[in-house]
Length: 146
Ligand SMILES: [Zn+2]
Image 1 (tube, rainbow, N blue to C red):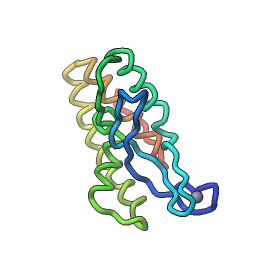
Image 2 (cartoon, protein in one colour):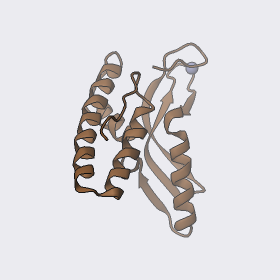
Image 3 (tube, rainbow, N blue to C red):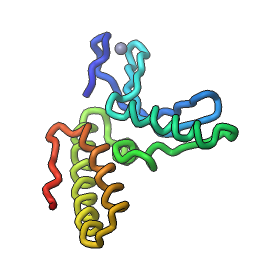
Image 4 (cartoon, rainbow, N blue to C red):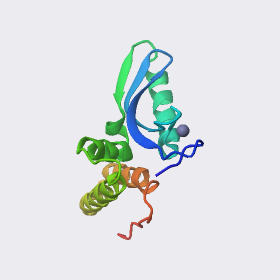
């Protein structure tokens, strides 16, 4: 868990981020402090949020657009599942670790399948998802399938 500059442990919550009043990104993982009210984007996903906003802004600048971040980012998807399963603060870290492990195993299974099919786009997509998750894990895994 992350510690706030005021010394309090921070919570993970899912927030809506709005850009230029036209792009709305739902369920973005944010660290918040219940003591001083400070909040910040989770560093692991910050770059990806900005990138997605840029892409959407360039492509659909005229319309108001809503994006579900968990559909674009595997880590957000895992965190959403953990928070919705109702894990309380004390065991949230363990819940996250467990769901992450399950998700990685699942992705590795699909990865093998995609490789077997020789589907390059699919393989690439799964590699991207694995990378998104791996930045949050305490024990980084390696993809050993060749
Ligand atoms: Zn604080």
